[in-house]
Amino acid sequence: MALRLGTSRRLASSAAALPLALGGMIGGGAVLGMAPAAAAAGPWSLVGVVVAAVTAGCAATATSYQAQHYPGGAAVYAASRSRLGVLPARITSSAHLAGHVAALAAVAGALGELLLPAAAGPTGAVAVLLVVLAATAGLRIRGGAAWAWLLLMFGVLAIVVVLCWAIPPVPAMAGDRSGADEAVGIPGAAGLLFFAFLGFERLSAPEPDDDRFTPRASGRAVLLALVVAAVVLLALGWSALHQLGAARLALSAVPLRDLLGAAAAAELAPLLCTAAAVALLPVLLAVLESARPTTTAAVDDGDLPGALRRFGAHGTPYVQDLLVGGAAAVLVLLVDPVVAMAVASCCLLVHHAFGSAAARVLLADERRWPTRAACAGMGLSVVLLMSMPIAAMLATLAVVIVGPVVMGAVSRRWS
Image (cartoon, rainbow, N blue to C red; front, side, top):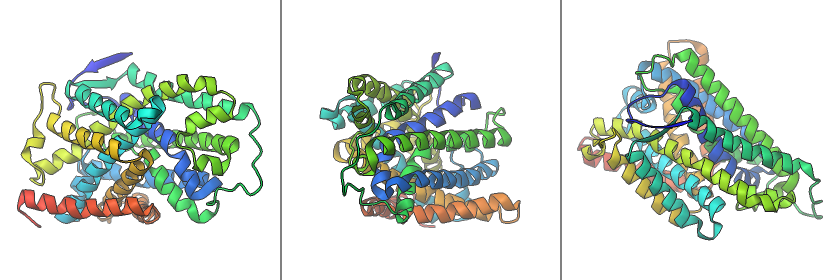
């Protein structure tokens, strides 16, 4: 196990990228996604996991082919700018940046709820700032450390699943229903659970200087990550529905803690919740790192201030990190983690909808399967986006209006 100090430009191998991508998917989604998905679709939320995974798979396919033409982590942005135009690219980059700020706030809020429920907001804000400082100092989690943290999260979730099935659940009272147990809620649940599959761009759009990460290796890594994440979420969601029922799960603020209480394992809750909170720390670092490529590309194109391109002694864009982390810390104090998760999902669905549209144009004269995947990804992203909570859609609408206006003012170019 090794914690290595290095520059943000040095790329890890696919073996290191896989646990980081998987940890980002499973960590945030498992802790945050179960309760709101159950509120949206009740037991049908398990179907939502599958729909979200298919949507992510289509988006990953589009991103992978874009990365072959526009290498690097900003492949979606670069393809959107080249194939769709300046305005779609600005919408894409605005949604990407805002989505990562909201994702940081969501994961940090979940960490706070697990670690110190009485002061969840301040705890989450402090966690974000500590991760930003660590990133600015050049800390990167790679090698055995990445796998160890992933196994820690797997271990916590495995224990919770086993305990959920260890004793029979309390029988539901007459008339105790979720209020949302029809299939019509599946798109809403899938839109929220899309958050659980974010992070695949680490695998589908690696940096260009890693010759070990071939397109075939990238495709296999993406498929493995999505399948594993879906299986884990299905197992956890099924266990939670079995033990709590859809009604109680939908009302749960901290499902992991409530599941342990329902399974007569409340004495294990402090230990397991602390372990889960610790396992979320690398997720915060991964989200922060994932925000950099698109933001840096927008700076290079003149749409954002050049100060965001400044690198510190360890090669990290410290101004970017401080601004993104500061915004996320404020958001943690103001917004519930589930709301932040919904906003993150909305923004990143917009990002991938435009990315899939750009991939469709890029692949118009090429192989049929990637083209169909891009079309499906675009359509599914729009459907899930339109099924999200109104507040999250309004926040995303504000982002896609204000972001391009600000970028136009900064660059003094409108086309």
